[in-house]
Image (tube, rainbow, N blue to C red):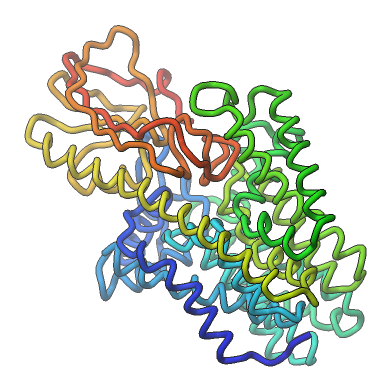
Length: 550
C-alpha cells in the first residue's frame, strides 16, 4: 500500500478535523466532563492522589475511586492546561482540539498501510457522530483514539521494518492508551494476534508488549496501595456487573448494538451504497426492511413504545436505516477477511468485532463513545472496498455524512447549553430565597454547585420546609417525590425540542447510554426539555432505604 505521507493530505485532514469543532469551543461542561474536571482539580492539589476526594455522583457522597471508572491520564492533561488558563470551557476545549487532530492524523497514517485511499479513509472517520460529538467533550474517548491509532501505526511499522525503537514506542503508546481509558488494554491482545499472523518477526516483537503490561501492573499495584483495591480490575468488574439493561447476549441487545454502530458511524449509510453499487443498495434495503419488520413486530424496543405520540413510522425508519448501516459495517469486515485472508484483514476484522462485542455485551451500557474506537477500522474497510472506484462516488457521500455528524454535535451542544443556562438562571433567581437543593448530575450538577446549590444525598439529606429544589427532567439519578409531600411548583424552564436530539427524556435517543433509547440520535424529538423549581412546604427526610441509587 501507500507508504508516503503527503503534506497536502495532512493539511486537508487537519482542516477537516478542526474546523467543524470551532463552533463548539464554548460548549458547557457536559455529562462525564464533570468527573474529569473534578479529578483535574484534585491533581492540582495532590498529583499523586488523583482520586483522593469525595463527590456526590450516585446521589450520595462517596469516594471518587468508587464512582470514577476511567484512569486519570485525561485529567492530568486537563490539570496541566488549567495551570495556565484555569478551568475555562473555551480554553479546555481549545486544548482538546489537539487529541482530535492527532486522532484524525493517526487514522490517516494507519490507512496508508491498509488502503490505496488513505485520505478518504481519514475523512470518512472524521465524518461520523462518534468522532465529532466526542471531540466536543472533555472526556477520554478521543484521547484514547489518538493513542490507539498511533500505537498501532508504530507497532505495525516496527514489524514491517524490523525496528525495535518503533515497537518500543508502540508499546509505550499502548500503555498511554490504557491509562487514558481502560478499553485501551484491548490493544495488547489485538496486536498480539496480528503479530502472530506476521510469523517469526511478529513473534520476536511480542517482547515489547511487556511495556504496557508492566505499566498496567504498576497502575494496578499503585491504586491498590492508595485506595485499597486495584482500579483496573475494579473497573472491569463494574463494566461487566453494573445493571445497564439485560446482561449477556439477547436478540434485542444485539439489534440495538448494530443500530448504535450504524448511527455512530453514519458515513457507512451513504458511502457503502455509493461505492459498492446496486448489490449493496439492494442488500441495504433488505436489511432495513428486516430491521423495520423486527421492531414493528416487537412494538417496543429499548423501553420505547413505537407507536406512542411522537414516534411511529418515522422513528422506525430511523432505526431501520441505522441498523442497515451498522450491519453493513459488520458484513464488510467479514467480507474483507474472507476475500483477502491475510494479517491486515484479520486485524481489521478483530478490531471491528472486538469493539462491537465490548460495546454491546461487556460494557455496562451501549453508547456511541464505546463505538468510537472502531471508526478508523470501519473507514479503512470502506476504502479497501472502494479502491478502483470513481473518486466522486467515494468523496461525495462524505458530504451528507459530515453534515449529519455536525448537526448531531450541534444538538449535543444545545443539550449541554440548556443545563448551563438553567443552572445559572435558577441560581441567580432563587439563591437568596432559602437553601437551594437540586437533583441530577452531569453538567447541571457542575454549574449548580458552582453557584452554591446543594445536591440531594439520599443517605442523609433533609430538605427543610422553606427550601427550594431544582429538578431537571432529563438527567441521571432522579428520584420522585413521595406521595403526599407538600410542595409547590414555583417555576419551569422549558427549552423547546430541536430538529435533532442526542439525549432527552422520552425521545428515544441515547447517545451516551442506550438506557435513554435504542438510537444514538433521532430526528424530530417529540418533547421539550424541562427544568422545574419547587418550594418545599414541609420537611422532606430522605432515608437511604427509600431512594436507592440507580
